[in-house]
Length: 386
Image 1 (tube, helix red, strand yellow):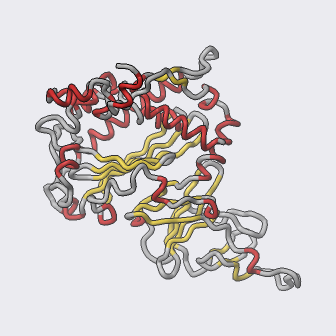
Image 2 (cartoon, rainbow, N blue to C red; image 1 turned 90 degrees about the horizontal axis):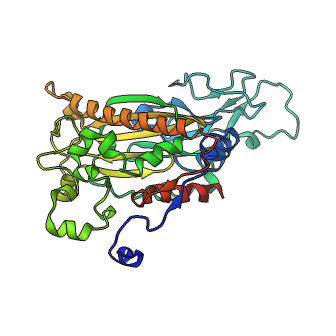
Image 3 (tube, rainbow, N blue to C red; image 1 turned 135 degrees about the vertical axis):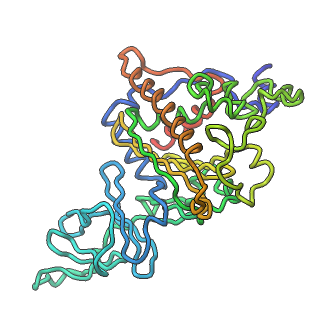
């Protein structure tokens, strides 16, 4: 096939070699700080489930880069978010990572400036405020905060924040899952010794799947062919016409979900359509901070957070219907163990990738046809950096 023929046929793959990002983007401390400023401080970030902040005055402090963000519920249980910084001389306001405020004020532990739960300065300890001092000028630095289907997102530049829904690859993709009503069943955290971009690059290709994810590739036939989507195959039309099961979209015959034996651990979500059930996994991504994936019987959420040029935190949660968790016979170990194995496998190769990038000879690599989504991610990063 020529390049033109492939494009007309709907082929996803790259039709020419594209370079990767420069190696220094994964190693250099100054560049890491630039990405924090240009990317992480300027995009919507997933923080936690709304249910983790229950009732008036509940609070949590989220750290991203050098920034601490205080998220709380006011007296009316409305979500609020501010920089965890006093407007007096810049002290940290809340020292604990989470909890419940004892009253209706946020009080600085240093000089006792006190703010209401909407962030407005109410009191200073000085008996002799200057004549030109106006409390209205010293409200807390606000941060945009949204509850999207039970997931809390923040944006450090509220005046420049695009609509949250525009940060997803498709905010409608999980409409048939009862996201807001789900309950937490399991949490898994892992520190990866790699740059945050290495994680996303691994996520965006399946060239590694047959060798790295042997069990997963048995559940998803396309993965065994080094492909993520049907149209990643240059001969996809012929293979779909022939019904070749190796190139089947979705799960293998007899498999229901991502689990050790391919069986669901609970009843299917009732509103899923036939396509969603057959596909077995529906991803809703929000770069740079993570993704939500719906399966027929559970929802899995992954949040990543950069901790340094070569360190990234992975935080994964599994959510189920409350009635499933309440059933004494319910056992989620099959889906949880399977999911953790996939994460560990990805983490191991991501760390190998990071270590190899330290070669003084390696300036950049080359992307293969199937790595079109990696290229798209690189283009996004460069656009963000300006």
